[in-house]
Amino acid sequence: MLAGTMLAACYAPADGAAELTLREVDTPEPGPGEVRVRIAVSGVNPTDWKTRKRTPPAGLELAIPNQDGAGTIDAVGPGVDPARVGERVWVLMAARYGSGGTAAEYTVLPNDHAVRLPEDASFELGASLGVPALTAAYCLGVDGPVTGRNVLVAGGAGAVGHAAIELARFEGAAHVAATVSGPAKGELAAAAGAHTIVDYRAADAVEQIKAAMPDGVDRFIEVALHQNLELDLAVAGQHAVIVAYAADPDDVAAVPVRRLMAANLTLRFMLLYTVPAAALTDAIERTSSALAAGALTALPIHRFSLDQIAAAHDAVEQGAVGKVVVDLR
Ligand SMILES: NC(=O)c1ccc[n+]([C@@H]2O[C@H](COP(=O)([O-])OP(=O)(O)OC[C@H]3O[C@@H](n4cnc5c(N)ncnc54)[C@H](OP(=O)(O)O)[C@@H]3O)[C@@H](O)[C@H]2O)c1
Image (cartoon, rainbow, N blue to C red; front, side, top):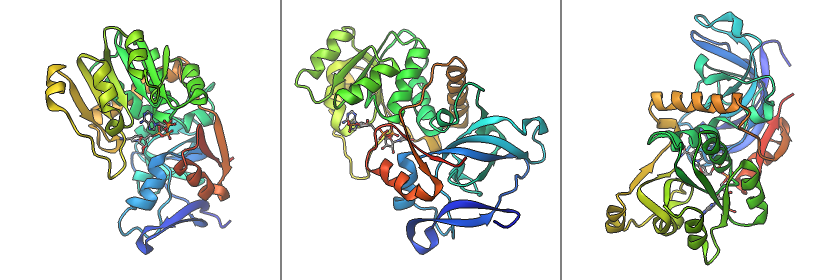
C-alpha cells in the first residue's frame, strides 16, 4: 500500500457496473465539521445491494458501498473537538457522503453521524445499528412514545424487526408481538423480547394476535404492507398507526378506505434517507439511550472479510437470517 492510500471495495456506477472489486484508493481527509473513522466492522443491509444494483449514484466513477459500520475516530476536521480522536463510534449513512461507505479501511462523515459506542458494546453491534435501529426508532416514535401501547412488529427476526422489538420493550410498550415465518425466526424474536410470537402464515394468526392484545394493536412496524394489510386491519385498535418501511418496486397495496376510516387509522410511510433532521436526531438519541442501557443486541453474526464483499452482499440479497458484517480488523 502506498502512503495516503487505503483498501476499499468499489463498484463503478458511471460504467453501469454493479460488480464489486477491491481497489487501492486515496485515504479520505476530514473537512470542516467532519471526522474520519477507521472502520473495524462494516454492516451490510438490503439498501446496500439495492443501491448498487438498482439506483447507483449517477455519474460517480467509483462508489464504495455500505451505510453502516463501527470503528474508531482517527482524525477530525476543523471545528470538531480533537478529543474525539480515539473514540469508539457507530456510524450512519456513510455511503451518502463523498468519501463513500464503510466497505473500506476509512470513511469520512459529518461529526454527528459518528455516534459514541459504549466500551461494552461490540463493533459488531455498532455495525448493526445505523439503518435498522434508526428505522425502528423512527417508526416507533413518529406518533409519540410507545410507552403503554400495544405494538406489532411484522418480520420480528429481520434486522429492523429485531431492533424494533428491543426498542419497543426498552421504551415501555405494554405488549410487543412479532410475526415470523417459522420456529427459528420465532426464537430470534423471543430472544429480542417479544411477548407474543405468531406465524403470520398460520390460519389463526388473527385470533392469536387478538388473544394477546384484546384491545387491539396501537402501532404496527410494517415490513410488507401489500401482504399484511388485511391482517393488520383485522387486529388494529381504534386510532392505530401503521408505519410501512419496505417495499419492492412493483409492490402495490390496495387500501380499503372505508375500513381505515372506521378504525380512524393512520397509514404512514417512511424512508430513512429523507426523514426530517429533527426526527433523525431523535432516533439517534433514543437508540443511544437504549444502547447505553444494554437494551440492544446483535443478531447472530455472519462474518466476511473485505475480499469477500461480493459474497457478503449476495448473502443479504438472498435473505440471510442474522447480521451480515464485513470484518476489517
Ligand atoms: N424505508 C427505509 O428507510 C428502510 C430502512 C431499513 C430497511 N428497509 C427495507 O426493509 C426491508 C427489511 O430490511 P431488514 O434489514 O430488516 O431485512 P431482513 O433482515 O432481511 O428482514 C426482513 C424480514 O422480513 C420478513 N418478512 C418478509 N415478508 C414478510 C411478511 N409478509 N410478513 C412478515 N414478515 C415478513 C422476513 O422473514 P420471512 O421472509 O421469513 O417472513 C425477514 O425476517 C428491506 O426491504 C429493506 O430494504 C427500508
